[in-house]
Amino acid sequence: MPALTFALNHMTAPALTLDAFFALAVSLGMTSVEVRNDLDGNAILDGTTPSEVKSLAERHGVTIISINALQRFNEWTPARAAEAKELIDYASACGARALVLVPKNDGTGQAEGERQANLRESLTALKPLLEAAGIIGLVEPLGFEICSLRSKREAADAMKAVGGEQTFRLVHDTFHHHLAGEPDLFAELTGLVHISGVEDPAVAVSDMRDGHRVLVGPQDRLGNTNQIKALLSAGYTGPLSFEPFSPAVHDVADPKAAVAQSVSYIRETV
Image 1 (spheres, rainbow, N blue to C red):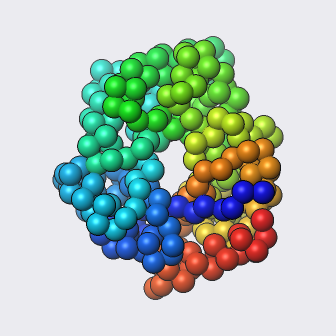
Image 2 (image 1 turned 180 degrees about the vertical axis):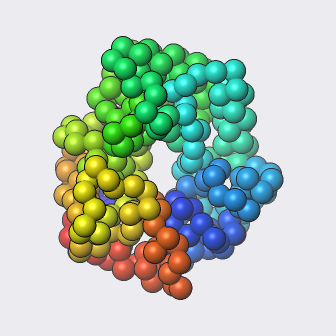
């Protein structure tokens, strides 16, 4: 089985400046990071230029494996096209390897036929933009029942239908994989794995939300370590990126110790 490689998503410690976040990753022995465009008062929303982000990453010796994310990517409009171009240009200029693509998650666009057509339209439009910039598009199905793209198989089929096997990759998110209830892994098409756990014993799977997502530990209900084992056995060799959304994680006094404890648990269990 290949060695485990961990990465850090800025959502793990969203209050940290980008400089402090990169330093945290390095202190944990991680050289891969995900930068977000949805954190108020932080890059990218605070106006930090891509060249500043690139120089910070170089100074810390980290690789930006993704900008997270282009939201509602499978609802292609002129505004979405402009937003995509802007984010892809930013990703390219700051040295990021990929852009995460998140589907609309509001109960619309779910109809059979409609959602597949919307997905292919968006991938077709994104493909030349990503290829021109040398950026990978990371398609992330969400397991929520109201999401317009829950199935990795549907995403994989669409990627192949538009000839995008070299341009697009799947995100396997352990939280969303559990919620979607889709057994297939598609390790050969997976470019990134997001990891987080849910420990609250009272919440039903259908009621699990981002706020329940904590670091992976012994009380995890999502079967993270089994998912990771299965992905590695199927040939996945990329990073496992921590992406907890819970305020309980964001408020910890010592994020380094908290993440290190989760890393140790995963290493011992996988």
